[in-house]
Image (cartoon, rainbow, N blue to C red; front, side, top):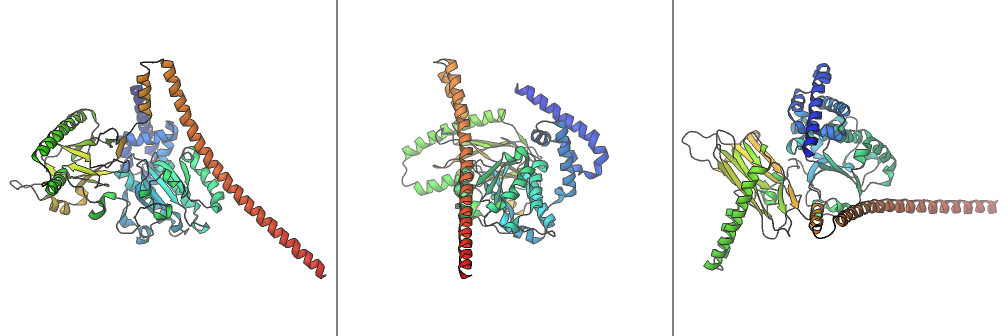
Length: 514
């Protein structure tokens, strides 16, 4: 069944390519960037993104691609860089990428109170949004992000409907599939009328991704460590420029530097505890570690056979996407990254993370010869648990070694290697926990002993209960809003009664005077 769906999808992708090249490109070649056309020819996932957003309607997807490509050429998206903008665009701090939500999606922040409507600057502001989205799309292709509109202390002077409409178009047309949800924080009642217009622009797909939040419930979507203090969080991050704040792997070493290798940590730990450990304990520990490593090695061998590859210019990397760790109960606290050097020279690599205190990596910084493969072991340290917010970065650069020269000093090499010669591959983190699939499995086991129909009934009840909980949550949100409006109306009525009473009283005084 899955194979048949894949064939149908491939057929639609090929149809879009053929029709675009025959129906659109001949008349509009000058309106498209040749790099976008080439990408359309080569990259299935890009075409698939437009198809999915248009519910696999080929005609609608073609219109969307045409509009998107013309916009990309008009805004010169491929050429947007930090140096293209006046300094105030980034210094303001109204738009930036920082942190992750509870589902592990990068957050795209819009500090609305820092935006003012001004005709002279609106194009630069729009291009700034395009710059951030294109920068993210190149670094994390296909991975969704969460848009957070922080409306704290926002007033009418901050409302720019044209700018809002542009942001919506970015997610609806220009970057399909990149929006996981849109969090509207502390929307003031004065913007209710404007918001009705915005909802009409969004369309049903985007409206379903809206989440309204305030200080009491925003932690349903964003954990406290990534929330600023004014939203009830403890994130110490304060926007400043330069540099650009979006890359969590380039923060200062004291905050978020490269993780130490397992060898380095082991040396430090053994140095601190030598006087306390006996030879018998060491012998037992070595046996446990050896058995553990043997299990990991068997996983690595099976991973090489089954996991998809990321094929980069310098390295082939497996797995291609997220690193998977078990929950605390499962005990699966290790995983591996397999690198293969596909160049004709040695390649230096290093691994970095957004949570250096939680993980050990062995090796984390090394080099290896052309045509060879190296296995990197990533393991959780101490009592820490993996989180979807954790990120890893594999960096690699080709070493152009002179004949007869020895291996370079890697610490010095990384300081000198040009940025454009570094290949990067980023990982998210998945935590395997007991979810719905585990419940299905339990019911399957139980079905070996009791009636299958009864198990199907249990599964149906579970699904209905889940649906009921979701509906109940939505109902709670609607009731909360209704109570708020009721209180507002009650206040207005009370104010009106007071004004009427005062007017009648003053009128009666005038009569008495006469």
